[in-house]
Image: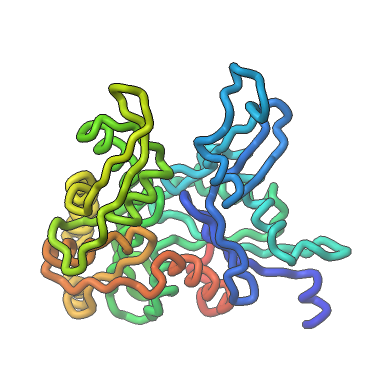
Length: 348
């Protein structure tokens, strides 16, 4: 077994719209933003992950032809699926390269388990598989995100008991009712962290006549993002920096969580509606289980202040936020890989 382990390696990957996480030997070895910096002229990959994120929105103007104006930052995944096939290959290959599993005299045979959205099409699923194959994986298996999230939360997904999972990532919100190792009913909408950022950008433009970038919107969301207008613990107001639309000059506007809750209201309402629709499709016996067990929130969106309270108020059910919700999906994917025999029928 020891000798075989040299030539056979297993990794679990949460290939997310915003961040990608790689688990190897039950440990998170890579947690990087899903972004690639590439030279427009040569196609050379300049950076991946955090280094590429630092370049996002700060690359030069190619028309000026000075300095590193040819560098472009690309997010290969949008809405939870591959939007740029070639860049997705580079991203997966670089993420694998960041680990120590490929640094040997002989390249190992890689088995990968990748989590995918529950609403993914066959074409999109094939694109993920082919991108992983081109990146060097010999065997690729896939598991649906809500199932991986449930396993990562600690739920016994094989038990004859219904559980509702709401996984809000960067590109999609996945809502699913799980029982006996299967998804009884599900809903996948492309309203999640990226949409929240866009809402904040539009709000600052319309209400304050100020243009901000997506990275600044992300900072605003983390600092004062909220799903409700009345919080028990109010975050401090946040100084938002951008460009005045009227004068064209840089300026600073201080925003509070109540303003941002109004900015995010429509998107949060769409998630609420998706949850209610999924509950309406749930078989009565499973609905009874959910009434007792409540709803579980996972993904980065679960950290939005007051989201659990708002969903609880709308559904009249208990709402639980997973421990370390950002890594719940990756953690579940790693557990499924480690217990491959037990969860084999969940991994396709």
